[in-house]
Image (cartoon, rainbow, N blue to C red; front, side, top):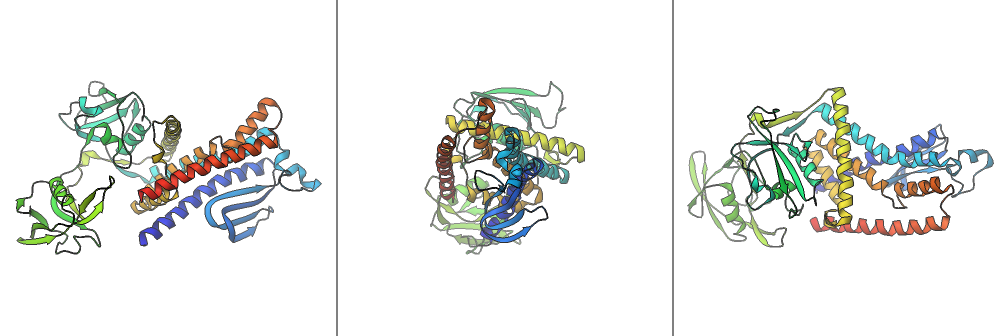
Amino acid sequence: MLDFLWNLGSFIVALGLLITAHEYGHFYVARRCGVKVERFSIGFGKAIWRKVGKDGTEYVVAMIPLGGYVKMLDERVEDVPDELKEQAFNRKSVWQRIAIVAAGPIANFIFAIIALYFMYLIGVPSLKPVITSTIPGTAAAQIQVNEPMQVTAISGQSVRNWEEVNLALVGHIGDDSITVSLAPLNGLQGLDTDTRTYTLDTRQWRFDPEKESPITALGLGVYRPAIEPQIALISEGSAAAKSELKVGDTLVAINGQNYTDWQAFVDIIQHSANVPVALTVRRNGEQFAISVTPASVKNSDGKDVGVLGVSPTQAQWPENMRLQLEYGPIDSFAIAADKTWQLVAVSFKMIGKLFTGDVSVKNLSGPISIAQGAGNSANYGLVYFLGFLALISVNLGIINLLPLPVLDGGHLLYYFVEVITGKPVSEKVQEIGFRFGAALLLMLMSIALFNDFARL
């Protein structure tokens, strides 16, 4: 319940900020173009707070925080007194109307830059993208790794951490090939002789984002610190919590066999759903025999697997693999702008590949996934929440630029047709377009919601 409330609260804060930025973009440019704004609303439905400003605009916070709107004076919607007609939206030039409509998505991109600016100004603890192996039978299997190697670029795009590697790879889903540049972690990096570039055949590269990352699907063996057999965490309400196991216990044997590695232990537990498992653990220098019965849960393939509810102790990451992405006031802005551009480019690529079939509609996410993402990022701290806000803000801006008549992009499409033809698109054509756009948007939202519930 607490997780639900935390996710909900984080979602409302995130969505409120993004909607405010978007609508303020429309509001600001409309006022600069001389349009009278009657209402600036964050949310829909019944107002829970309202105030009329000195400018005559009614500012509202409404009950349902799933959108917002800026209500401008418009003769197409209502009767306008003669003395106010010059302040009506429909009386403005087509280029002014384009500027007002485009200002919302542009405000989202600016918001993303600001969020990333503060993220990099505060500093982001990160990890260098280091691999120690490749996975046989994958696209990356041709790479020979004899020492820890750092990924320095994906298809010519420089990368500094795993998050950037992941973002770069996502943008190449469906491509025939990808180049990966590597340099020895402890070598003389920066010299051409140290960097090795491999061209990987990715024509057969397919993966399910729900089950694996593009990094492991490509075949890169990510470096991970050694896992120790000492229990670091026991989940509340789990099978382990109902047994005599305690945090700090060290695994010695499982079903009479000496402990070898954590993965082997996990395999035994997963194959022992509702079957007692005999554990031998060391606690304060003494050994104890403990019987536990892993709970049965269904995995992503719908199969029953055993789950114990414990996590191991992991060794510390080496200092030479840690990275602090922290920059000064000027550099932070340049890097934030570049990162926003990368997010925009990748998002447009993904939308294009969604229509070509290279990316499945199963990857669409709705408000439930966004709420979970907001809650999870907020759990990790402010810098990660800022990064999440930037990502969603960019996506909100791009979605609104899609040429669907119910979105900003649809209005822009009509206005550019007006620029070319010299006359407005007829009301009948606009009405048909709005119906088609509403139906398509509803379909996409339904798929996204279905995916959300399927993930739950």
